[in-house]
Image 1 (tube, rainbow, N blue to C red):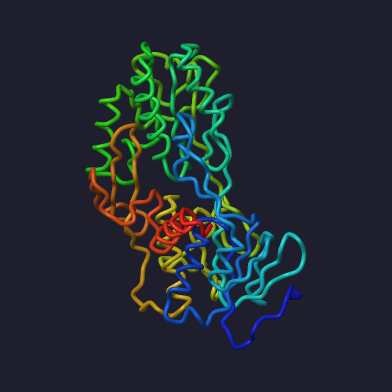
Image 2 (cartoon, rainbow, N blue to C red):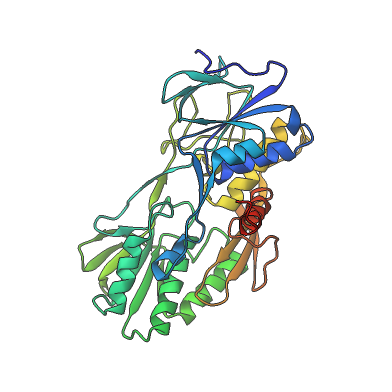
Length: 387
């Protein structure tokens, strides 16, 4: 493979594939490490902006502007090179990646943070996609306001990665209908999970269940929505109370991995990783975020994975570093938000808690150690005229 450009042979060449939350967190964590200044970092991204929209569930109910941050400026501020392209293959023997636009880039360490692919799971339903949705769900809310639709079903399928956004949509829809005085609305949430937000379990799951109950959102847990004919949702197992009528259905997508050539992956294309986010069989290669086999796909967890990989690359972590993490999430309810924390060890929750006050700082939706304060500072600089 031919290099696209030469690099300083005395510096450790770190290549980050991706331009989302996990990728940028990796860059910031590398620069914050004790040896961060000795690294020659290159970010390879198919897009030229970090799109940050953790509040996308608010878009159907009013303005929730998408924040875009130019990757060129982020890289410039952190002494990194930006390459606008996409990694399509990894050659572990040559320690190089092949790019979609042709050519290759060498690496001493590689962090793959390219995210996941999304596909609809229920024909005719509206698929809520956090990166490009808004109008479709907004249209359904307008139909409720005009009383053209009365029965709305929210569906959490298997393989969605993170179900909290759909619980938020259900709660926000219920609150919106109540505030607008829209009567005779029936909201149902169908989830493959054994209980609401089962990935956190314990106190947090119970609290979400109580919120849904108070909002008159009916929950059918442990069910799969297998079809919708425009009127009846077919469930497996079926509902003992009879057919589930739905005028509209909103479903989360099923996620698939990037299936990059040269990287070991499971049957759905997710990159295999060990407890240190290393890719087995490939020296110096790490993968973080939604692209990996880690089942929970959440920005805050992806950021912690990025921090771990960056620390190992910069030799700032001891040999006992592992993929234990604290899941931090904010559930938007239409009134006071609920702050959720859960200890995650490996792939399983150990304990969870809820609070009405933010137990972490800054209290952003994506609780990232370096990215959250960096973006908060960006907003402050922008308001001060230094955008």
